[in-house]
Structures are given as C-alpha cells and as structure tokens.
Length: 317
Image (cartoon, rainbow, N blue to C red; front, side, top):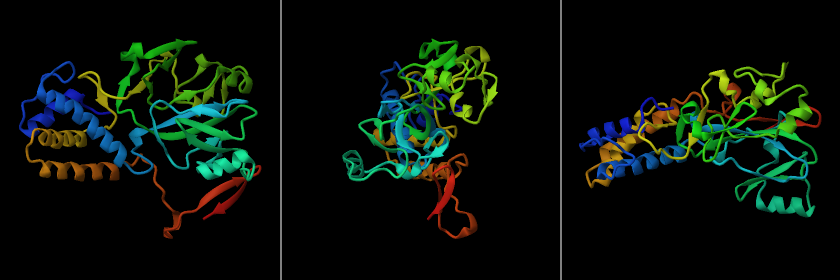
C-alpha cells in the first residue's frame, strides 16, 4: 500500500508540473483536481496492464472456493482481471494441465468426442469458471489472480465495508479482502474438519479448531474482529482524499500523474513521460515479491512437473 494518500501524490505531481496544487481532490470541481482524479485511474490502469504476465506482487490476490456437488459454474471474484498462470490447485493437486480449455476443446468435452485426461477440466467464460465434468463432491480450489482494484483500505477504519457472521469480518460488495476472495461454505468445514469453526481461526498460523493442517493456510483469511490484526480490503477506485493506492513504491504514480497532467493542460510532456516510463520499468524489475520462472541449471529451458494418478510424477518439457 502506498505510503502517501492520493491527495499528497496529486499535490506533488501538480507542483512538479508547474500547476497550482489542489487543496482537495474529491468533492472539488477545480480544473486541476478533475484532471488529477482522471490521471490516478489512468496511471493505475497503465501499471496493471503493463505488468508482467504474472503480475506485480502487490496486485496479486488469491481466490479460495469450494467445488459443490451439482454446480458446474462459479462466479469469478469481483476484482478479477486475469489468472496468474500455473497457480491453480485442487485439494493441493495442480490443475495447470487441464485448463483453460479453448472453445473447441470445451465443445468436444461437452459432446463427449474427447474427455479430460484428468478428473476435471476448466474454462473461464462470461465472468465465471466452468468445470467439466460437473463436480460430484466438495473440494477446495485455490487460484491466484491479478486484481483490477487499485485502492487498499484498512477495514477497521471502514466499518461500513463489513458484514458480520459468527464473529468474523467479511468484506461486503463493492469491496474484497486484500488477500483475495473467499467463497467457502461453512458446511465444507463441518464436513471436512470436525470441531473446526469460523471463529476459531488463528491468523498467521495453520491452526483451525485446535487442529493443524497445511490446507488451513488458504482458508484463514477472514479475521475475528477481536484479534486486533489488520484486515485490509481492496476498492476499485479512490473516493476520498485519504485513500491510498495498492503500489507501495508510489513515486512512479507521482511521475505518471505529472506527465498526464501536463499533457491534459496542453503543455510539453515528453521528458516527464520518458521519466515515468523508465521508473515503471524499474518498479517491475525490482518487484522481488513477484512470481518468476527461473529454470535451474542455466539451460534456458523450462520444465514442468505433472502429477499423474495417486501422486506419480512425470516431467514434461
């Protein structure tokens, strides 16, 4: 999350652009403020769209949900922009080799001309994730994705963004948890983890209801309010001068605002645009939290490992 508010970034950009810094952004009809409000959206959209295919680490979230018997379509998270490749797993088994299916492959699956070589195939279609064949029992699925929501807020300071269920915080629309969307029914825990309960989650550990299991690390995302731990949410656009953007290194945002403001005012902006472009490249290059494909041995070739059957492994080039 950015160290400065959107108003502080906008004021710095205005000063750098040679314009009068606005005293407020939201609720103001000032010409400079209007252009800066639009500029914030444009800069963040540019950073999102130009990030590497696996995304900037601060724009990555995780979708955790359960497959339900008889349900073949699952609505994507409201902030979903794109899937991070090769992060799909079903009950800790990789799903990467069975999706996303092309339109032709999907049609052949449905017609029975061909069948998936693994338990499930999947496709993203019209804002939903489709599974083939239709699930017959509950299983946990985890997928990392790139968010399109550019603002991060602390939910403890945004109580109207919460609904309460069994002493736990849930981000209510139009917000989503910063760590990602969770769509898991309480029945799933009752059936799979006897003795577990929503209110017994322990943040930062894999403990749930007195038991310990690796899978809990994906489920413990919605915190008991009494825990005192930060609960951050994402919002699609800034709406207040005190809002903060998702990118911690906010200098690149300030530079982007500078060049867009000068362009909007009809001033020369080539130097400012080039400075922003160079800084943007550095931000992506220095994002050590981002996922990278690093082949071992320096061969320049990348190998994937596929799990077949009950755990046998096959190396696939």
